[in-house]
Image (cartoon, rainbow, N blue to C red; front, side, top):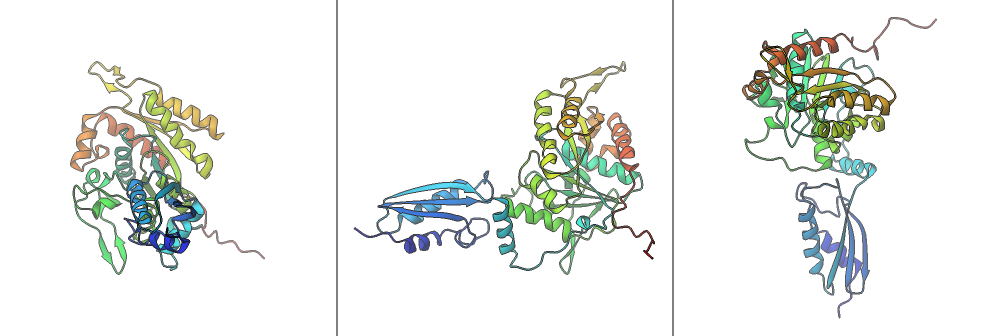
Length: 372
C-alpha cells in the first residue's frame, strides 16, 4: 500500500484552480487545513463568501484531484468561508502589492454626500428610486453621480438611458452622462444577456474601481444602487466609504418590510447613518381622488419605527411613492419619471428637494483661521 504524504496532497491541491481568478487555490490561501488519516484525506477549503455560486464546482475539483493521489481512497471536504482579514490579504495579493488608488469620497476633505440606496429584497423598486432620485437631484441644480453597485442585477444603464461604453483615458474612466447625471455600471462592459459570476474579492474590487478609477469630478451627491440584502457589497461599502449614509426602500407589505428592516439594521454594525425610509408602490391613485392600497398599508412606517428603536435615533419615513404606469415606462425607455409630470414624479421630486436642503459637509474645509 502506498503511503500518503502531505507533500503529495498539497501538490494535488495545487493543480486545482479557482475558476474565476485562474490561480491555484493553494496560492490564494484557500486551503486552511490538511489531515491524513490512513487512506482518508480531510481538507478544509475557505471560500471568499459562504454563498459562493461556484462552491460545488470547487468541491468537485478538489475531490477529483485528491483521489488521483496514490493511496487515497476517501476524501472529506469541509467548505468554509474567509473572514474579513483573510479577504483583505487576498485582495492585496491579487493587487500585486501595488498601492491602491485613493477614493476621493473617502478622504476627510470630501464634501460629497454619499447615499447608499438599499433594500431587504429585490423587486421593491430600489433601482427605480435610485435612478429617479438622481435625476430629481440634478434638477435641483446639484452635480450628481450614480454607481450601479448591484453587480449581478445591474439595471441602471437602461433606466438612465445609457447606451454606450465609458471612455478610458490612460487608465482613467470617464463616465457617461445621462440627464445631467454621471453614471457607472458593470452593465456598460458586459455583453447583452451575459451574466456576471463573481465572488467576494471580485465584487469588492469592482466597486473600488468604480469609485477610485472613475473621473467623477466635483460631485454634490453620489448615489449607490446596492444589491438587495446584506451580502458582500453591503459590507464593502462602509469599508470603502465610511461616511456613506443609508436610504432604505421597501413596499407597504409586511413581508417586504421585515427584510427591509434587516437591510437597514446593518448600519448599527457598520456605524453608518440611516437617513430615512422610502415606501414604494404605496397606493394606486383612483379617479375619485381616493387611494387603493394593493399591497397593504404601514410597511414603510413599520420599518422606520423599528429602525428608530434599534438604532437609537429618529429614522423618518421620507416618502410614499404611488404606483404609476409612467414610472415603469420611464424605466424601460431610459426616461425617468422624475423628469416628467405624474403622481410619482411629484413625490420623488419633493423627496429630492428635502434631501437637497442639507448643505455639503464642513469636513476638510479651510476656514482661514490660524493659531497665534
